[in-house]
Amino acid sequence: MNLLMAASENDGIRGAKVGGIGDVIRDVPPELAKFGHYVTVLVPSYGFLHSLNESRWIARVDFSFGGSLHQAEIYDVQGKSPVRGVRHLVLDHPALGSEKARPSTSIYSFDPPHRPFATDATRFALFCAAGAQAMVDGVFGPLDCIHLHDWHTAFLLVLRRYNPAVQVLKSIRTVFTIHNLALQGIRPFRGDASSLDAWYPDMSYDEGLLADPRWTNCINPMASAVRLADVVHTVSPTYADEILRPDKKPQYHGGEGLETDLNQARSHHRLFGILNGCPYDPETDTGRVEWPEAVERMTDAVIGWMGGKNALLPAHFVAYARLQSLLRMGRRPSVILTYVGRITEQKMYLMMQSGSDNRSGLEGILGHLKGRGIFIMLGTGDREYETVLNDMASRFDHFVFLNGYSDACASLLYREGDLFVMPSSFEPCGISQMLAMRSGRPCLVHGVGGLNDTVQNRVNGFVFTGDTVTEQVDNFVRGYIEAVDIKQNHPDKWQKIQEQAAASRFSWERSVREYMRDLYRFPSENE
Image (tube, rainbow, N blue to C red):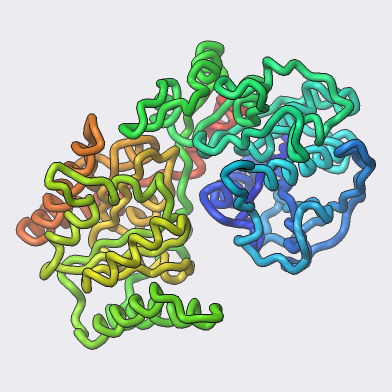
């Protein structure tokens, strides 16, 4: 099978990852190659990926966009870990980014509230137009399947359906993966420079088939892809079930307005939930380090962040001071809670909301943790949430907020903590809990999405639920208290939970076999 994967991220090459999409695009192609398939991964260059990585030019594509003819260049890029049968390509065009752009921070744009997604929607609409034409031109060879990821690549399905110049693509099977239904890329049909008619002015289309269910004067790329793809896929079985329900925010996230389309896809046997995997290479399972060395490594990361700024940020100053206190203390705290992830509403909501005692979930945990241990959090994201966390770090000397990101720090926190917390309000799959469990660290999670599919309460971790936000916050804190009680007072039981966490396996081989059976309709060698 010759497969093309198109996505916004690809951690198979340097500088092309922001979140979980990058992990999936890094891990799935090599696993498919083990079964003898040939996979081409295509992402935008963002103006720098072809120069950041060793690359060679392979093709020029002439395509139409915005009523004008354009040219895009396609480069074959050296992967981090070259695998036979997998090639990484980037598509370069001036509108996709500047050569002066920086890795990670230049992959997505942040538009003002009155024009959400405007910059990125235009960039990805152009990327899809060029990519579709490259397929027609045979740049990727004869394709058996096109696998598209999230709303950024949905315009390719719109072009496949309505653009006469690329109708040949209708004969190729298409798979659309939903990584996060909460982000849908909605833009107007017309009347804006970032609109469907502005991007593809000569294309006739069925407005009803592309419209957002709530804002019918707008195209919803996510909804369009759900309606137009041959198969729709979500990254965990529980999430595939959850999105069939209407939203009841803030208790849980359901179908984000697309539940009618998703239920129709399920009834037509077009919707599948397959759990993402986790790499288990020997080099990823490195041993623990002495506590003072771990603190020194985190301190080095903070110093590096300080050096990259024109002014000393209070968050870095406080984090540095807290880490120095830990170094002076010398001994390892008896309880270490850790968190690694984006600082977003999805991840922080239940930490910030109040329980029945009128304290936030985070305050409830820190109140109980005082004198028992520390909580170390690593991440960046929403400025308002960062501000609250910085304030909490200044008030609680046993809370360390590392307001940045480093792979080295993340790896330390997955391995060196006692309990990894992940109280996401919703979670399509989640990788952090898998990485922590891989290192034998039990996790405390909200029983939603992929968290529900990976963590079993009191078996390999701890799971809380609740019918209201107040109940969820209360149960989050109770779950933490129960976990700490087991660790401190029932060591045999704690060790068993640790062993079960370490023994839990979520292999990409298993997931890819399901891909071949359900998504690609291509049997594995043993079927």
